[in-house]
Structure formats: C-alpha cells, structure tokens
Length: 226
Ligand SMILES: *[C@@H]1O[C@H](CO)[C@@H](O)[C@H](O)[C@H]1NC(C)=O
Image (tube, rainbow, N blue to C red; front, side, top):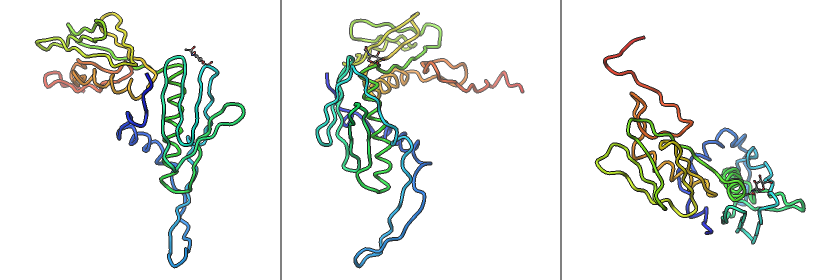
C-alpha cells in the first residue's frame, strides 16, 4: 500500500526536526536595497544535514516527477511532495540530493527537514524501521491475535488495538513488543499509542516504556534516603 508522507506527517515531526536544525541556522544579516524598498535578506549557513547526499540501494526504485518523489522498495512504497523551497536531483550514480531552490530562512529549514524525510523513506522501504517497547508490571501482558494487538494492563478489560496496515507487531516473552514497518512516522505513532495506555509511572517504573527509555525514578514518600 502506498502511503503519503506529506499527509501522515504531523506538526510534532516538523517541530522535532526543526529543533535539530536550529543551531545551524542563520549566520548573518545582510541589508540589501531593492527598488524603493529596504529589504533585509538573511543569509543562512547551509543545513548540515540537508547537504548530505542520500544513497539509494539497488533494491529501491525512485520516480521523480517535478516536485513529487515516489520511492519503492522490497518493504513498501512511499511518496512525498516537496515544497517549492527545495528541489531534488538525482545524479548518474543514483545518489539523491535535496537542494535549496531559494535562499530564505524557510528554505534552509525545509532543506534539512526534507532531506531527513527523504532519507527516512529510502531507509524505510529497503530496511524498515522498528520501535521496541517493554511492559513492566505484574500481570501486564501482550499478544497478537490476527490483526489485533491485545494488551492486559490491569484494566477491567484487555485493550484491543487494530494493527494498522503497513505495520507488523511481534511480541516476545509476553512483554516485549516490537513494532516495525516502512513508514517511520507510522511506526513511531503506533508505538506511542501503545505506550499511552499505561505510560511508565515514576515510582516503580510500572507501565509500557520504550525499550531504550530510562525512567527517572522518584522516591516514594516512605523510603526517602540520600
Ligand atoms: C535492500 O538493499 C540494502 C542495501 O544493499 C540491504 O541492506 C537491504 O537488506 C535490502 N533489503 C531487502 C529487504 O532485501
């Protein structure tokens, strides 16, 4: 199933990528006179991430038409529509380059962001992404039933979640959940929605956490010690 990055990516994504770019933004301000106006043009340092070329493995097919890119690989197909601030080029060796089409602050932000999104697409359809979760707590369990993920989290009823198309969910030892798929944002969003049922509480760390998540424990009232 082809799904579109442009439709599925959300403000949170935008924000996080922008934050990563923040420290490489604008170096200096150069005042430039235009016919009748005094305009301030901001000259930006190139985005460090934006400049990195994207290697396309042989099992990935790229279709580039104007501002639309389709990426097809063994794991799936994704597409993206670039804003006019950036342009994408493909050289003879098959390497993709995201370039700025204009020199504006916004183009600079778009440059890094869309380079990252493009790279995620290429990696997604060839190698895929995964997010691992760990359930911590007596009686907390997970299992996959058909296309449903069933979670026992201490509520009166088990939580049943339909696994979205394009995603795979595996459960090991009843408590370790792996979400995988070719669309990075979809993998991240589904993993987050599992965790949301029981985010780890800060006292005993009970709940559903990302496998690599460190829970900063608060001390209970009784056991206060230095
Ligand atoms: C596609 O090619 C890449 C690079 O050679 C490789 O790492 C990846 O495993 C391949 N994907 C599949 C599903 O075979």
